Length: 72
Image 1 (tube, rainbow, N blue to C red):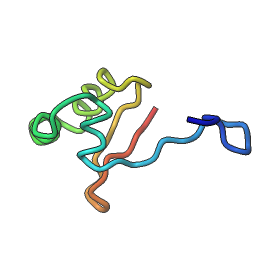
Image 2: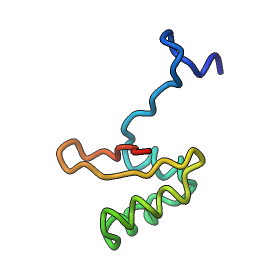
Image 3: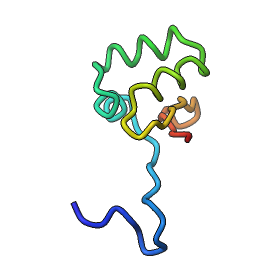
């Protein structure tokens, strides 16, 4: 699907995702994602999500915008 690089030559930065999109990305059911989010500490959730993410991003939930944000 086209060039993964933007005009500046850097890889396209991945943006924040809602729960449905993150569940799809991590290849889990949305119920599993929500259960992990509720039962794990933010650090443990980040580690769990990193282990499932194909690009090895860890994900953190932001209460303000209700989205999951990637961190490398």
